[in-house]
Image (cartoon, rainbow, N blue to C red; front, side, top):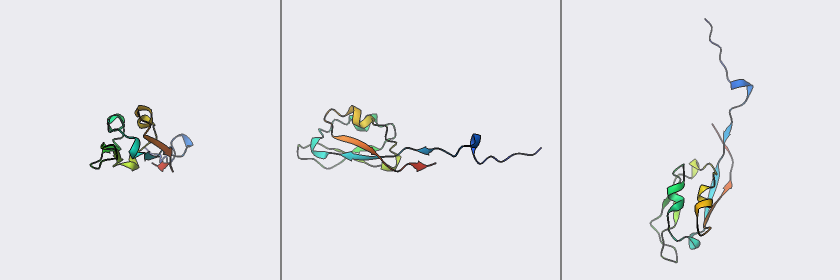
Length: 91
């Protein structure tokens, strides 16, 4: 029995994974942590530093894992975080 090698499933290239760049406006943040809790890729965590209001803004610790889903943008009550589409990651 001969096993065929398929490099392209169904004749298509492997799709690329979307990637996003996270922009955080520290001075708008009130440190609620919603963006950290609702990020499905665990990209964010609250930082140790303080902003001018005395809150801990989030920081991207796994920014390579961001898939530009926009949950952080949608859940932020202060409009302090958003993502922009970046180069897609192959694989």
